[in-house]
Length: 324
Length: 292
View 1 (tube, rainbow over the protein chains, first blue to last red):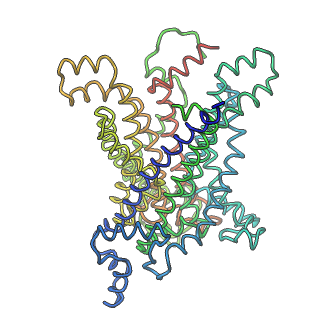
View 2 (view 1 turned 120 degrees about the vertical axis):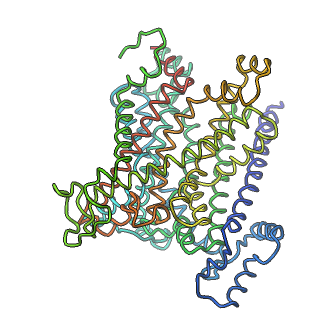
View 3 (view 1 turned 180 degrees about the vertical axis):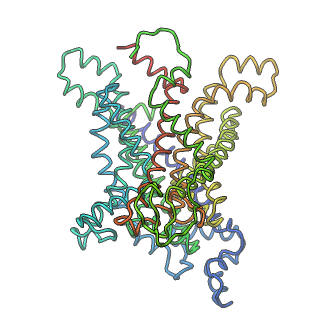
């Protein structure tokens, strides 16, 4: 029987096409990130060093950053080094950028993942409930609430949460971070408020998608068949409707996670969370271009990788996608 | 609710019939009026320092209270709203002009131009919104012009995608083919046939983008990279309130509430407009209603 080849072939082709496409976008991303430092009006090294510096310091930094070489050489040098994990050194303290990024990554990943867990815990039940009661008052309440959540600035919510739970009630720390493995209790106490801030806003966005996904599945003929053959509503809801809606929900969860990793900048600043976002913010203020470049590249690569993974998973779960 | 109508009602009547949309439009109209006349309405000067009167709670003299320097929070919120709206409108206008031009050209011409333009758009989509905006600020330095450019660039690809997708749907319509066969110049076809027929989704996207532009501007100003002091901004007012939240809640609550009201109104209006202007969505809604 040739079933396995028929099954694996389109998936392999689909994956190959998606990987190729991601690589093309990645090349574009690298060009943009490389161009960043060259688009700065004036001399980036001089701007980074400020007003007081010695000519030696200037020359050292300029040659260390490779800015004294021809631009094409610089580009291929940057790409070549980046492929081997070398993203240059910080203008500010001379530390290797890759080391700094790897130190910051766990904090951002843990905040993003905790935020997504909270978002799903709210959005799945709220969106499903809203869809199943479409057009009724409770549906309208969920919809307006989620619109409200989308409209709240995350940093404002963070400040209000700190004011309530930290300063007034004293239940949780106002800011800071503890590593998960050395101090799990401290990690949990420190992550609750920032994760809640990130998660509630993400939940508001995801509730709308969950509702739309459930509504779309609920209009399918097999759901009508299931209902008309007398299956209990609970079975129709969970086994036929929600289960099939999980596929598009998976996609939006992936996209949302990818967005969160680059979108938590302001929340990280509010909670003094030592992640990539706060690193970018501090580096923009200090004009530390190699660090900005490295962080932007890392976040864009993570974004592309998560999207690729989600697309591939989607194709594996839903054959219609890879055949399209 | 009337569900038995068989004739199609006009878009405006559909829009007016949805109370949420009507209220959002009214709120936005009020916000625009307040923003335009902010300097006239403001009861106090935005930088009138009055230290003995600092951190006063809301009262008859200061409806929104005073900040740590005794400045009137209401006046500052009004003027900051004006700045926010101006930045949002100009940056989204930039995104609409550039994005729609790119999207319509890509969708109508197709071929290599489409491929190249859309790959550029894909690359821009690989950067999270605020990160891309921060990168622009890193290059050009903080300030209002940079903020406008940053937000404009960030939202351009969205309009390019929406315009392209809609153009692809319209370009194969018989009236476009007939017009082309009659020898109508391309720019006339684009202006007379394509643009009016893809306007619906673009108007919806404009409303939603204005909402996000207000949020992005607030975030950049919060980080100290947008509007610079002494010019007040909603984001920076919230930043400054951090040290005083427990003793002067009004310093944080009113600027934040102003952002929420504006953004919520744009979002709800966008949603209402989508029900009316996006034919695909309307067909689904009508089909579902007919099923019942």
